[in-house]
Length: 376
Image: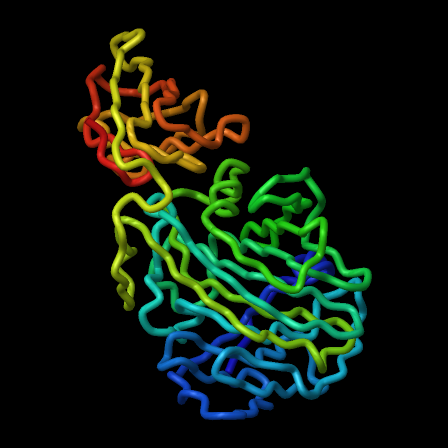
């Protein structure tokens, strides 16, 4: 077993949060009733392999045990006492997807960011005394089948916390997501770390995780060409531990396809988006080596397109260099425009015009979509 190795500078940056670093080189057996794991990096599978539960005592050596149920786990021993201005003692957690080659089944992951529909997840948990956070940990990587440390980004969502520990980096602002307010922290320890800390703590969460990923894209912390490889929820204890428990956890993605990884899922068309859309394209200026253009997208369906995202296929030889009225990027021939923070939703009948500049011969793209719906 190995955990991730951090450079000394990264260890200093990790002084304010955990980065869950389990390496498992085998497929663990499925848990039976009241399975107990005390092995430092031990893990097991539950619900027919749908989820993996990991002990993952990566930041301490004083011993930790978890009791695994059919729906989650509880920390039963390991009263940690590591400095609260350093790395946490552990990240015992439950997850869907693949982490260091240890994969759950039927998760729908890896899933490319530009193919996200709705990423539904819910969790309920119990807390205890000590210093800790209760948090999601979402991992992104340019490689859909990363077998080691993810190199793209780590996105954490703190539902609750207690004591002095803070996320990696510094606070850069706030966000209104999932109907409530969050403090946003950004840092880097060899990969991007963006953390959302709920301003009002809670003992349960019911989220569309795509909202947070889309916000991270708009902030430049996650790339649309990267893949979500795992969705985890657990606790980072600095002091204490016993009594912290995940009582239930679920994850169910939908999108227009996966990333070619080891698991598959049945997806629904244009989840969370319109049933139909219209798109038009206009060249606004051109010169020998490039041009500017506008794309107008109209939600012609009957439901709101939340956190709208549009894709289209660029003509051969055309490369987009920048855009406005949206965050515009290109991977291969696919151009992706994601909603700006000031205009995240498109109501039925509403339109948005996205401008962009490109190198290459002026020509119209094709294959427009809006939140997965094909545009006419």
